[in-house]
Length: 328
Image 1 (cartoon, rainbow, N blue to C red):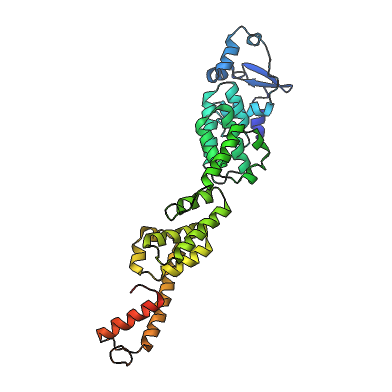
Image 2 (image 1 turned 90 degrees about the vertical axis):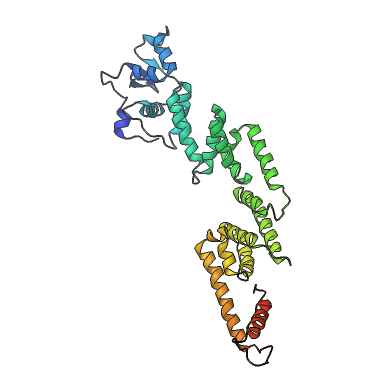
């Protein structure tokens, strides 16, 4: 918990006007404003207004408190500083804000931690600590946000976090139950994409492979996928880096009509490299098709195809398309 020199000395000595109360923390004096504290905290207000001995004391001891943490707490609280929270300060400040019932800081801390839950780069250890904090202070919104992130971490990984054992036993049991429910599913053509998304969220490699193999087998069936299903599989392969599936779907995609592929909204959302690959592969097939057509004998005159003749053109072209399994 780092603070610059000015911040460290901010409450180390009296400045006359705003130093109306003195606390003793870790054998060090901390000078603060009774008015600011009373305004923000009902606990401090009660302390100063009641008949407690602290009301008239020259120096009020705060046993068990950390001097640096109290300084950070006051720097965040005081209107002239309003120091931003950090990953290092948020939990101790949250604890002090809860103890002294400083609502403005409680909301500030909760919002900060919610933003960390929404940040994909937040470390696993931090997410577990946020969940523990949400449990401790019964913060439902924060609990749900942290729970959603932690529940999708592989059990072997999350259990390696030392703080994991501090989570309530019911929370850990719910993790296990939800994971089992999410992963225990019979794959069908109708649910495979939803299951794949869940498998990726939960980093469940075996289930990801199972989904990939299911879609590969679907491509190999006699009844080929419709355009929407075909492009959906190509999109899934693209998004989740499923190389085997991508190769299989590409072989089918290049045999479909270009205008049908490009008419699909999903095709338009593919990575540019993937859509270009489909169309360029299809172009190469047509180049080979043209070469083949030039060598084919005409069905009606048994000479080289005469494309001024409609019969020649239709019959020979269809024959070549059929031989490649392409739509004519």
